[in-house]
Length: 363
Ligand SMILES: [Zn+2]
Image 1 (cartoon, rainbow, N blue to C red):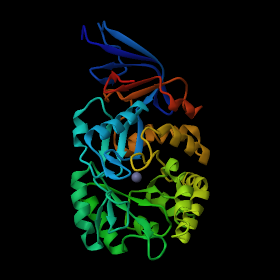
Image 2: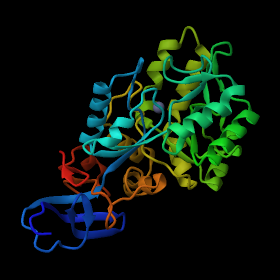
Image 3: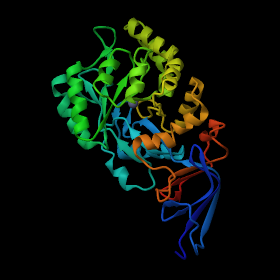
Image 4: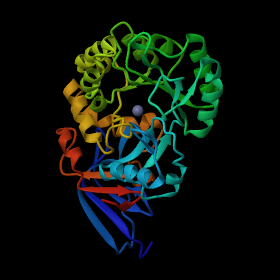
């Protein structure tokens, strides 16, 4: 190992929330805590190092109108990367972004295939739109296309009812979740309202996105079964505008969205207090910009989650939940170097000093 380029990260390395070391080395793109012998070309980076941040709910290859071309997808992935977000769980995309896996300068992506929605019950051009009889087949198809996740749209406005209603009958959703599990995929569902949650959790769902309708009667069941939530509070912040825009046509829906928005912080804190796993997701790609992960962490803190836990929700615990390594010996060197201790002040996440992806300094 004589003339190899080596990166030396020193200062404070947060291997875990309570496991702090003084330095790490990057050799051949991987993390090591053993000083490489005979290394000559050493570059040093100093600061507070944490594992590459996780956005557990974003969309690459999608914008407000539907699928986008590869150049736009690349820009989205770069915006995430430049915010220090080096692991994405893509919560549904109509584009084939598999080519990103061959680019070691772009974040790693865990895909959930394409959204599966009920006919005319989601944003146009986003989802496969099917009737309940076809749900199991579509879930099997997307489980095979994705990276271990499937995404359902669990509730949406029903224009006849003028309000959010559940999208799937209980029996079909049970069969669909069982099929995904048989194929080794976990299932998550978009849910704004209260109404679909009991069927989904009792049917064995693994995660709920947004989860604004999670109330006291269901929180213990979510906690008991370890069903995670990804609140996407930076997206929930848009509810009042959405409500105002639909006030005349759908007054009940608008009022409902406002109520969900008003109690959003209580919902998240009650879920956290009960032991429900909560993770950072921004919902970038539909209408929001990519790279908002620090804003979402700040929102979780505002909701009452302790800073250390809010950081963990985009770092250590998020990676463990997704089955990806952090900064352990031999892991790909994906890390972010910050100006200060994020466990004390999460605002340092907003301006990373250095970003290292696959062992290379990329920002
Ligand atoms: Zn989304």
